[in-house]
Every structure is written in C-alpha cells, then in structure tokens.
Length: 319
Image (tube, rainbow, N blue to C red; front, side, top):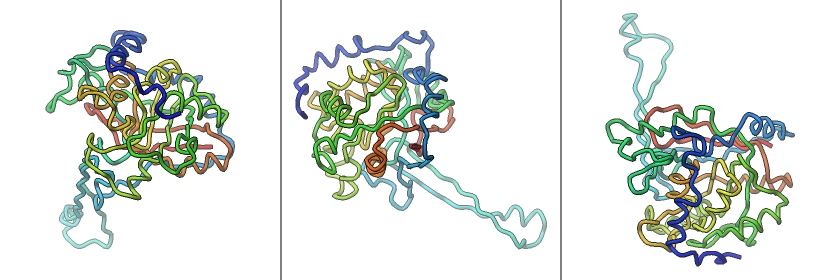
C-alpha cells in the first residue's frame, strides 16, 4: 500500500493551493478555518459517544531538563522565585512559604503543540488571503492568532493506526502514509472519518525517535508521515483537526525546497486546517485495540494567548 499515489508531480501539489482551498468558504474575514466544521451538533454527538469515561493523555511531559527530546529545536526555560515580598510586608518570617516561577517556552518543537493558521504562509499570504506581513516579531499574529480558537477542539476523534496496518510498532524513517493507507486503515478498523472530526494518524514516529534517538535536526530528519497526496482526502472528508505522532509530513517530502512540508503548507494556508504535531499516540493505539473502538471524544484546549502562532497543550481522548 505505501508508495501508491506518491508519484504525484510537484505541479499537481501546487495546484492544491487552488483546488482544495477553503478561502472565503466561511466568509472573507474568517479566522477559524476548519474549526467551523466543529458545530454544536458535532460537539454534542461526540460527547454522547462517551461510554466508560476512560481518559488517555495524548501528550508528553514538558521537561526543562530535557527540552528537546525529538531534536525539533524546542526550548524551555524555568526559573523559580520566592516570596520575600510577603515577609517584608509583615516585617517578620512567616510559617508558610510559597513559590512562583517564570517559564519560557518555544511552543513549536518537540513538545505536543497546536499549529495555528498564521504559522505558515505561501507567496506572502496566510489562510483566507490575509497578508503574512500581519504577523511580525513585535506585533505578533494580528489576524490569525491562536486565541481565536477559544472554544477549543471538542469533537469526535478518530485514530487511524497505520503502524498496525503494516504490522509494525513504527514505520520506517521516511516512509510515506498514502491515501490508500488511510482508507485501508478505515476498512480494517471499521471506522469512517467524518466532517468535523479530529483525525489522528499513528505512525509510531515519536516512539521510534524516543527509543532510537533522532537521526538529524528539524527538516533534515527522516520521519514517517503523510504524503502530499493525502491532502485531497483531508479536504474531501472535511477533517477539522489533524494530529500526528510527528510533524504531519513525511520527511523528506519528495519535492523541492518550496514544498519541504506540503501538508503543513497547503493544509494551513489553503485548507485552514489546524494541526497538532508530535502527539503521544502509543498508549492511545493500545487502548483503542483493547476497547475495540477507534473513535472517542477528543478534547484539546489551546491557550488563549493573543498574537501567537502556536500553543503547547495536553489533548485528551475519552472513551
């Protein structure tokens, strides 16, 4: 199955910016993109699917002592301060003590994080045609900030276990996931991706890197992931959120430097598709197998930070 459909020419991928575009679909000033597909009805139906209440975290610890376990360039700084001001106010030592801290984090990187719609641009434009110049180092993301996702990602989640489809714990580094893989996993698992879903794709990528170590840094690293040919599947199924135990894209992508990460670029810019990178899906896959269920209530709540392109987070699946 893998390899089928990966002969897509670069020009055909470039055509996706037009043929798969959601620009204007929800209005010329829309800032939510595919989150518009998570309607009240979709949320209610997803919540009604909860049976046992079993919860599974889909993230890992963010540890300042190991800030970049996947060699994705993450940086975490933590500093603690005391409460001397309280003692100074009362003029004597106090029996209680408290600690506060400062935590600095670059959200894009090894930790599980949401990619907002201002994260990538193409030819100077972000999703819905907003100028990329509206996102600056001083002003932040003024048009497509993550804070617009204030209602969170509360919807039906579906896990497609591509590693299990191939009978392995993890795919080979650089192995592409194709549309045929996605539909074969649906058939194998007896589940169908629907409009408004959070689609999670298990390749075993994060588990492999944590077990064996990374082979390079950033875009130079070979990783399993979705091939660009999966983009029409994501648009046709009206996926609201795409999550992956990696950076979504297979690396190398098979295309030139402009399309180093075509799922990121076309997904964010043309589809307005929100992404969650570097998820922890190993436990979820095991629970899905044990429960004989590949759908669940999915909850991810990005921070309401104004002017940012990303948010760390702890997505959760509830059965």
